[in-house]
Each structure stands twice: as structure tokens, then as C-alpha cells.
Image 1: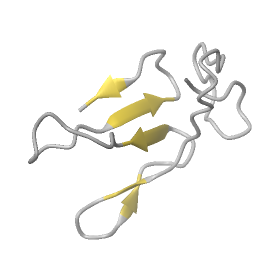
Image 2: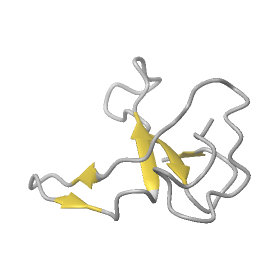
Image 3: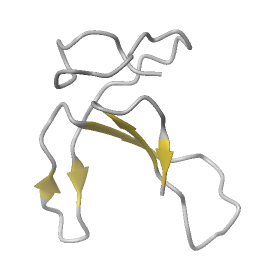
Length: 72
């Protein structure tokens, strides 16, 4: 799911191969006060277009030192 290499992702960018063709790139996150946090290159955040719960979107996160996509 992640772009391979460390041009955009922080090293070690564990087992990134982009085998899915998604080419996930990192970004920063923004809190409810509008403040950006997180070091650029560490995480990529995505939200689904639909949700099982209308009060909870369920963010998807890619991480520079983890192989799996996490769901919160």
C-alpha cells in the first residue's frame, strides 16, 4: 500500500513495496484546533467514503515502521 523507498517516507519504511498499486504517501494530521502535528514522512491518513457508524468515520493509517494498515 505504501510507496517504496525513503524519498517521502521516513526510514526504515518497513516492507513497503507498493504491490497493491495504491502508492500511499505520508502526510501530517490536523487536530480539532486546526494545528498540524506529526512529523511529515511518518504517517499517511485516509478516511473511507462510507462508514458503518454515522458518528465514527474510522480513519485508516499507514506507518513508516509498520507493515500493516491500522484502523482507528
